[in-house]
Length: 120
Ligand SMILES: [Zn+2]
Image 1 (cartoon, protein in one colour):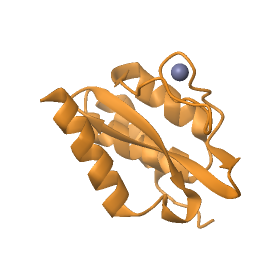
Image 2: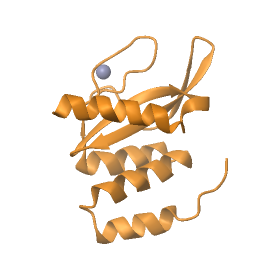
Image 3: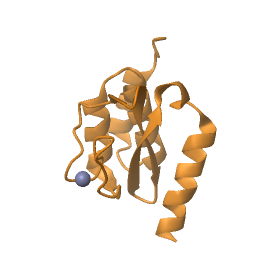
Image 4: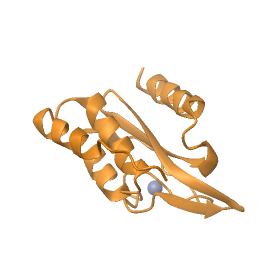
């Protein structure tokens, strides 16, 4: 996994501007890439309401009650999944994506559109 210099810089920036939602999401994204899943969830939880619907049982549920902050990856049906998230308007939606697609901007765009539609 390539190291992403700059996560500390992002966190420092965020400490100075805690209301910057885009910056907060970016910092959480960086922490996720580094495998610092619990910190990412805590960062998001500070300002974003988890709107993820209760779901299961194939993949671990990511709703507000069930979400396990440390569980950034899981395995089901012979596939590896990575936990991803999108944010919009003070809300966060978590989802599982096949690990090889976790960085696919098409998926996060489509989940983001779903979140935006739910908030509309
Ligand atoms: Zn749940």
